[in-house]
Amino acid sequence: MKQTSIFLTGATGAVGSQLVQQLTSLNIGFKALVRTPAQAEQLSKLPHVEAILGDLANPATFEYALHGVEKAFLLTNSSEQGESLQMGFAEAAHRAGVPHIVKLSQFVASESSPVRFLRYHARVENRIKELGFRYTFLRPNLYMQGLLAFKDQIKHRGQFFAAIGKARVSLVDVRDIAAIAAAALTEAGHENKTYDITGPDALSHYHLAEILSNVLGKPVNFIDVSPEQMEKALGGAGFPEWQIGGLIEDYAHYAREEASAVSDAITRVTRKNPINFTQFVQDHRFLL
Image (cartoon, rainbow, N blue to C red; front, side):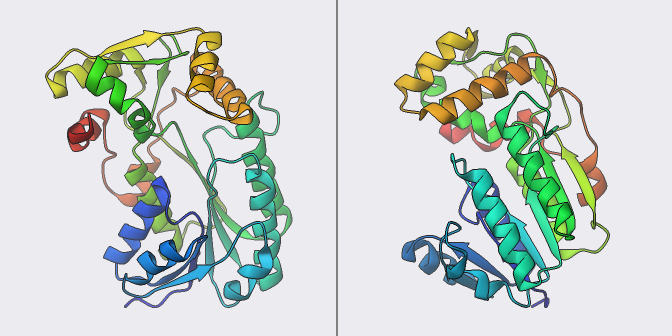
């Protein structure tokens, strides 16, 4: 086993589970903070993994495990407390003497953004800098895997929707995000770097529908809706108010084509070509 000292948060989510797979395949050990005994049991089955049962809202449950850690990966699931949880983790890591944080942020994060999620990520980034950490900020664009929220509609109705118009987005596969995270956690040379992480193409949702149709061999249509219609649909699907508001702001940001730039970070950092949307659909066609 390659000797290193890595601490993961968010190890069971979309990006985190991919990161766990990649670190395990590299034969690199790590600690992973989880919330339930079932998650701890599952992760502990992997070689060289130490599961830490704790709660980000209570640093006393995990701060002891941060001592001696060289790099910590900071990711929280989408929640109304995301900013405070990440701030609390940074403070705990600082007290424990962790020198380097690799934080999963968001494309074009800025404290002056009209998008609440972009503001909160920027505030956490700035606090990490203020505390004197070495840092690597990973700023991915819209996840390709986010489309899987529509998998039933695509499979049974041949359609999906969003309030985005014809705007293009350089959406990215979470496997590539995890690959950059793995590099930042295991290699030198990523200190005090910010990586904008995108796929290889900026595509409209109409183009996504065309690719889905071609790969799946059936018609798939994109339906552009108003923000009000999208808000109503999200409410009907049971999304909480804070998340609905944030998603509406996100999609207004996408509709202004503020997320269409294409970065070469994946190729530069991983020395591999990024996964394109056609490949993503081929790999997930069993769900669609």
